[in-house]
Length: 165
Image 1 (cartoon, helix red, strand yellow):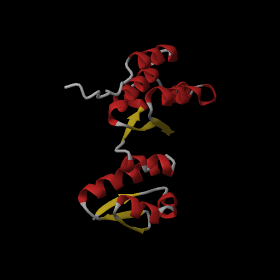
Image 2 (image 1 turned 180 degrees about the vertical axis):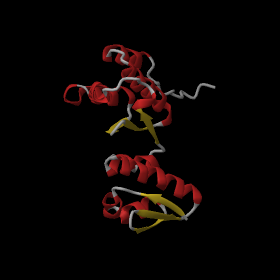
Image 3 (image 1 turned 60 degrees about the vertical axis):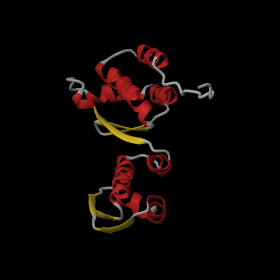
Image 4 (image 1 turned 90 degrees about the vertical axis):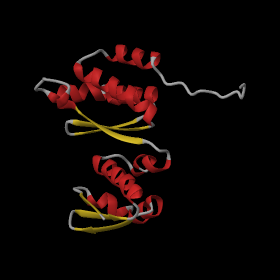
């Protein structure tokens, strides 16, 4: 039985039946505590999905952790900058009308969400590393154009098996 403390409990209780069916766990709540019951592997995945929902990701994106074997990572902005005006750093990450986040999403095939002084990333394990490096570069002050060119050069290509062995 795993116990998680949730601030946004409504997001979990609203989708409780779907979560139980998809994640193969039993979900119970008491106050702000959420209890997960099931196999330990399923509990671990359910914990990651609930953390993603808690972070602010939409249900369809958070459930990708289970369905598409995606990874949920959190990058803390304060770990990579000494600036005191974190508002400007967050603004650099978001970009004008969300353009920087949208471009990062298209180049890395990962989903981004900003909450307080943290950035959540959901994506396939092979894409997470590049998206974290790009995000850290923007936090440290690199130009967005330089980060985009880095991502274009270092994109992960899928290997096509032609069966020629």
